[in-house]
Length: 270
Image (cartoon, rainbow, N blue to C red; front, side):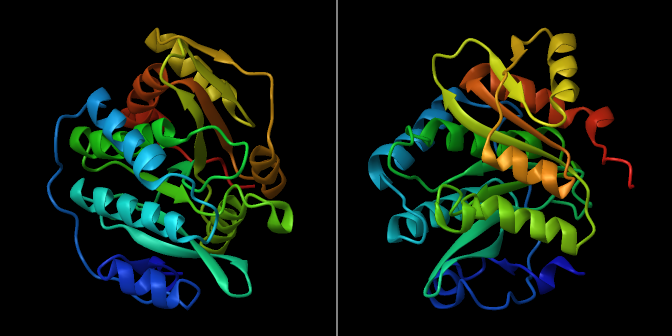
C-alpha cells in the first residue's frame, strides 16, 4: 500500500492536526531538501530542544494542546533537517486524537530501520526533553552524513496513555508495519539522561546493538529489563531493541550504527 494513502504530509500542519487528525490520510507532496548542519549530534542543539519540551511546552498528556504543540515543533524541525514529515493518526478516545510524527527515509527507500521516541508525557514520567533532543538531532545528523539512508524516524504520540493497554503510538506503528508488509528493526530511544556514562540496551534483538557498540568501543551494556512496548513488538513478531542510559553514549552509538551499511537489514521473512 502506498504510504501516501495512509499518512498525510505536513504541508498544512495546523489544519491537518486540528481539523482531521483522525480522518483518512491524504496523498502527500513534497521532496527532501539538502541536508542541514554537521554530520554529528550537537550537544548544544540537544540542550535547546530539551528546554523547549521540558520548560517551554511542559507536560504533554495524550491528545492535549501541549502534545499538539510538541508535534508541531517536531514537524517543523524535521522539515528544517531536510525531511518530508508525515502524520499518522493515533486514536485515543472517541473525540480525542493524537498523531505519530514520521520522517520516512528522505530519498524514498523502504525503511529497514525505524527509530522511535515518545513525545507525550504522563504523571510520574521523568522529563523527556533530552530523549527527544537526541532523537531530533540524530535524524538531522544522519541525513547530513548519509543522505541515502534507509532509516525512518517516528515520534510516538499517546505512548504514555493508559487507555486500551497503553503504548498507543507503538500499537499504531505495529499496525502500519503489518499493513505495508514491512519488517524493519525498530529501535526505541527511552529515558536518556545527560549524565549517564553508558548506553543501556534491552529487547528482542539487543545483541545486534551490543556487539556493534563493543566493536565501536562505545560504553554499552545489556539492561536486564523489559517493558510493555517491548512485549508488544515481541508479540507482533517485530524485531525490536530499546536503548536508554546516557544521552552522549547513546547518540554516538546510534549515529554510527545507523550510518553503517551492514546494519541496514530486515529480519528474514518467515
